[in-house]
Image (cartoon, rainbow, N blue to C red; front, side, top):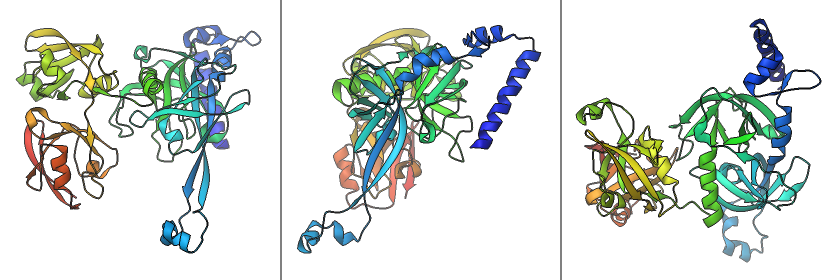
Length: 454
């Protein structure tokens, strides 16, 4: 750890030297970075901004109790009662993370789901040293966002920015509690936007940054140089488990949307349109006479769905929702999946040479999970496919047997071991014997495939 600090200091010195030799003055550097020159040294500094922001970033301690693995007989209550054995022992484990106060009046604190998952006791430590017990209002595993409440007594909340306005190259600051050391500030830039496909969460639209993020930073704040929250630090990619300059944050717009639903319902009630979507490929774009590989292609429309009632058709390409550009199927799924049920959206749609604006009502999510433990379908969430063709895979848990078997989001499951599956009940019956190998007939991108899943 000392070696890392020394290296960081050397890098800072090189950067300062490089700026000076390029003809920059401390004042011009401060102007470019948005930093405030210190009155005593005339050097650029983020200290005034951090003095305002850091009281809103908290350290979170979570107590988790797990049963101590004893003889399996000890878990049998009849056995324990017969031999007058004491209650099964548990082992206490403490873990640390970070959080951000976003509403001082209500005492709301946003953090990550994985920070508080399984915790029996959650405590929040403020910058001024106060330690408060936190109440879990709700948590959403699919976006990795959780909402806590603490006593709203003399709290400082952070201002929230529109994360859609971020650009690659913007300076950002990460604030959190790495390795349980206490509040720590690091800086960097926005390295990329809209990162997905990492299989960290079901809804992925990450901000990537090279600001140093380490274990314990989870749930902390990613802020702009004017002190506004643009992301909740969530994950890193690192072969050694520590920072290598690739960190990810959930955009503030997603975090706020989830927070509002958690505050209102204690859970996220996801909406849907009733369409199957996929990315545009060059071949599909050519066949549809579409010049750009941008947008989400409507592969099918469910009978009786709000999308069908609004007039959407297979082959339509959704390019924007309420004026917000849609680059891929993932963009559309993320946006619609976080919209409140019964709200209305206006889709910008390309249909051949036409450009249409279609208003659609977001309806309740009718996803269904099945009891598939011990089978290759474990970890899949389904919805009915259009025209009763089968069951569409809406979500696959990262690292689940279903993902390892090669199933993908958007696949339509038609049959299992030659048994047609037109409903969740039919599928549950088909796997009732818990077979370890399944012959799955699926439809993927319009083609029928046979997949042997083990």
